[in-house]
Length: 114
Image 1: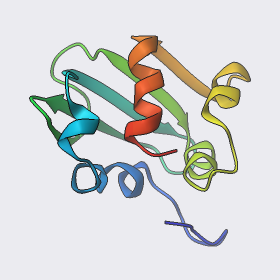
Image 2: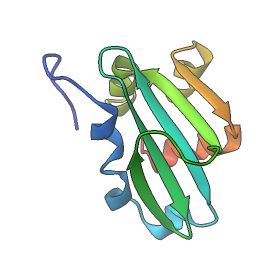
Image 3: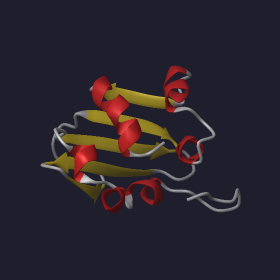
Image 4: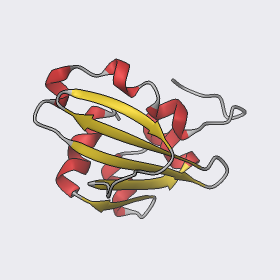
C-alpha cells in the first residue's frame, strides 16, 4: 500500500480494506466502535465497527459514542502505514491523538497491521 510522494493518501485507502484482511481470531472477544479521523490536506472520517468476530467500515462519524477515537494528519497515517513511524512514538509525540479505551488502542495496532 505504499504511496509515492506525489500521490494523495486518504484515510479511506487505509481503512476500507481492513475487513477483508482480518480473520475472526484477530477480532475474537472484541466488540467496539472506533472512530478514525484524518485531518489536514486529506481530511476524512471512517468508523470501524467490530462485533461478533466481524468488522465493517462506515463512512463519516459514528452514530453511537465510540469506544475509541484516533485522529492524525494524512501524512501521519501514511507514515504509520509505511512503517516509517511507530504508533506509540506518534502518540507520545502528539502526532496521533487518542481518546477513549487505551487498551483497545493498543489492540488496534495489531488489527490495522501497523
